[in-house]
Image (cartoon, rainbow, N blue to C red; front, side):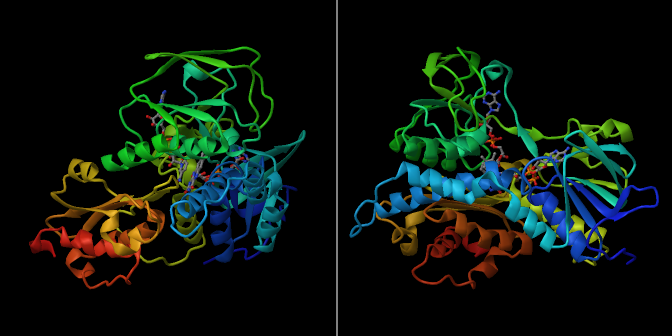
Length: 474
Ligand SMILES: Cc1cc2nc3c(=O)[nH]c(=O)nc-3n(C[C@H](O)[C@H](O)[C@H](O)COP(=O)(O)OP(=O)(O)OC[C@H]3O[C@@H](n4cnc5c(N)ncnc54)[C@H](O)[C@@H]3O)c2cc1C
Ligand SMILES: NC(=O)c1ccc[n+]([C@@H]2O[C@H](COP(=O)([O-])OP(=O)(O)OC[C@H]3O[C@@H](n4cnc5c(N)ncnc54)[C@H](O)[C@@H]3O)[C@@H](O)[C@H]2O)c1
């Protein structure tokens, strides 16, 4: 491995700054690729135009989970005989969120990166030629030259359907950064952002109406997932309208009043199912890779090339920028693999398919990995499934008095290997990693019988699921 083996970039003969790897975007994916490249002996520079640490730390994963966790603990305590129901303290909840986003100050993150040996540059990065990146910050520009690679780790942006443009609707950033709680909040979308945000906004006191264009929530999951989350949201007072699309929206005095503040007067939404008035609208209709203003044209690359990985050998993409699995842990995984590979590390061969786990922090939680039954069939597998109510495991039923949920395994009938698993119920997010290991390891379900879960833990649900499989596979 030939490396420059230095911790920071250096000035080249032309006065330009030179580093082995130049990473555009300082979110979890960008930081990890740089760290792994650096640990492998390369010099790495990370360019970030906003807060170092990326969307996940300040506007997505961390604030949302900081808001959701106390709600879940309170709901659990409220459903445990022998514990008095805790009171929700709205100001305390928002203060917890503020602490978890470090009050939108990235100094700690910069310190971490510099201690890790990375050079962090503030500014907007743009590719100006092969291996050349121009950084603009407050009217000043500098050019970084990458000896080995330029990595796009620019994340994704919220998609706003045309009918909802021009009214300064809330994006998920405003929901995670909520300061003013709108009395009436309409949420457009039925995916993960919609159901998680509906959970905390209802708890904060908004009267939430979810407008879902399809007939189910979380429709990329097993069908029972959406059903269980729907029932839970309804119990929390959220109104759900399915098969409802927004056709137009109007609002007086629409303006950007700041993160998490109500952005103007009441909004009138014309939908396929009639009119709805709300004090704010959260648009949660998906995300798209952030690839504009990046100078891709300068090197003859299109956004589609980034998605398909059709890139020059010096250019790479990781994380949300690829448009694949828009999840922090998947972006970090891709980044670890790429960073080590750039540094010439000998890696063990990955499995043919790396399954994607996902946890949804509603109450009940959802944990899922790999293929659903529908996806497995579509991919040509002959499938066998096993299902059980989550309370079939005494350990799960013990977690709270109102425990409810369901679990399912999808197994390849020909190989006896696990293709996917889904858990809904208390602590379901923690159940999924065992399934991830089984899928990655290609472990036949017959062998899983000998993986004994402790009693009485929720993991005993594995026993019930394995018992539900045909005897020939057990
Ligand atoms: C509300 C919400 C909650 C979520 N919760 C979870 C969760 O619980 N678990 C989970 O796994 N995932 C979650 N996600 C998804 C997760 O946030 C993303 O998958 C993750 O942030 C992607 O990381 P990234 O590094 O690819 O991009 P980002 O975190 O978006 O970082 C990209 C960075 O690049 C910078 N940048 C972009 N262009 C340039 C440029 N030209 N020059 C310089 N800098 C640039 C941006 O400013 C940004 O800081 C959530 C998403 C949302 C919206
Ligand atoms: N806990 C977590 O891991 C977590 C939490 C939040 C977000 N995320 C990630 O962030 C990404 C974005 O989340 P999201 O919920 O915005 O996207 P999503 O793709 O999960 O859901 C988008 C929803 O909007 C609907 N939709 C799309 N276009 C629409 C339109 N024009 N009109 C009405 N409805 C429309 C879709 O049918 C779907 O219900 C996801 O990939 C998700 O995995 C993860």
